Length: 618
Image 1 (cartoon, rainbow, N blue to C red):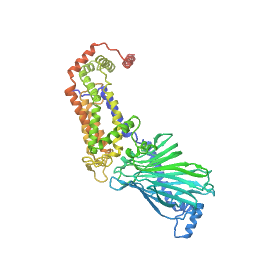
Image 2: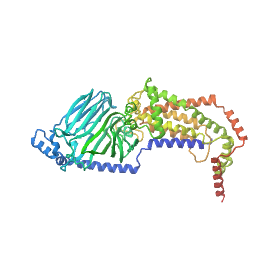
Image 3: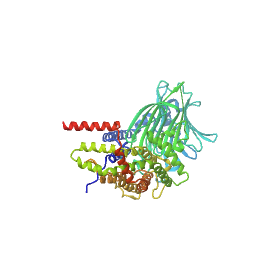
Image 4: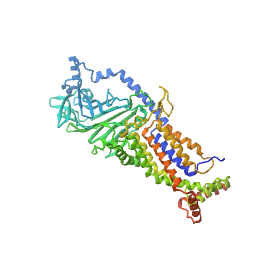
């Protein structure tokens, strides 16, 4: 029996879907050259870090020595090193400031936040979510003084004052030159708010700070791991920033990257479902940004995903510094970030690009929020899937109708294949002529695929990044925003490209896709020799999906499983109760009797084939 081959429509449809899949899964994968460059850069960074660690005590002694606060001589030496700012007595204290959502610890040394903890969220292993902890972040100003000293506020001691202002907690950190001359960091926390008002101001420092030299704000942070799969988490961990009057840009999430930008409104150090954001009420004149990828492979021991750094020059006006800023430590959640419309922090969420992001942001996100407000989260996914597939059923009908027409023409196309089996060009010309006379377009099956692509990609971005799904369980899945696990391989064992576990939802989705492809490709007729055969495609696609989705959000696999089941059901209904092969055949025969006018595309194709045939004869 002659083996079935894919027709042109199916091949083009397969290429489209396969190309989109490859684009979605591998668009962020570094090239081999980038991998090698990244490894080389990482080795240089490690060597540099080792060198710095070996000489750390020497550097600190030259800069600001570690002070024994009980040693008056050491304290005197410290004050001599920092000059006028030695007015503030050294004190290794910590001040706590918190509301019902965020807990912060601010150090006297540097006046900076040394711990930021989420009070209502935990990691996959039930540990509180920390965005700043154990020295993973630093914040400070670099500036020159009028007596030619180069200082960093991270090395200065600040004097804390904790007060209340209309029910808000206010922490003032001052590095003093005198009782009335100081550099102040001011933190103000409101109840029920993740956004912290933060200002950097100086008073009476005109003549102390050298205004002819730039004052640079430096902010660094290493993203702390929060998820069981560090590679999966790292895929959605990026430095995002708002610049040039609302333009949103990102540094690479898969390799090292750096940029210099102007007119920067805010900087977001996103760690998948949580973000650390520094925003300006106006904007920073410029910013030097960098991101270093710290994840090379999946493992259970690495603690950090990426290392971010930003250097921002601050303006000195009248010899003084005055910047009104905001810190945001909280979830990358559209419900929360949409509250800060003036700052536009909602734009830091990875909805996707172009029309895909628009569909995700304005259709699927609010639609799912509505459903999950009165339905269990897993059931809400099922209901949303049903409604989406029903909305797309006219497209499914068009696709199936095109396949039914091709099925009716199959005997005639087979006959043409036998007649012109030794002349592929003649066979192609005769086939296109038959399509034109019958009123059938082999491209019509591709149009539904084009229409569904925005939906496909928008949902692909929705499930892994929707905060509403984080740590929400359904059936055997503990977390719909991460992969489900029905079997964990022994310690140290992992299958390349598949992982160290078996997820059930991707298996069910792959089975559903296999049966769907049997229904859709099983009707196609043989076409050109050398084309991929149907059996190969029917096994390849589900196999690919099984591997790709094993480490993706279980909510996404649940969607594709239910979606394909519904599509199969819709197609069965169309086949049994809507489409009639006899009527389709009669309509095609009637179309053949009507005169047909070639459109521009058909005319161009015919002319090209005729030219090719003539050239072949020559």
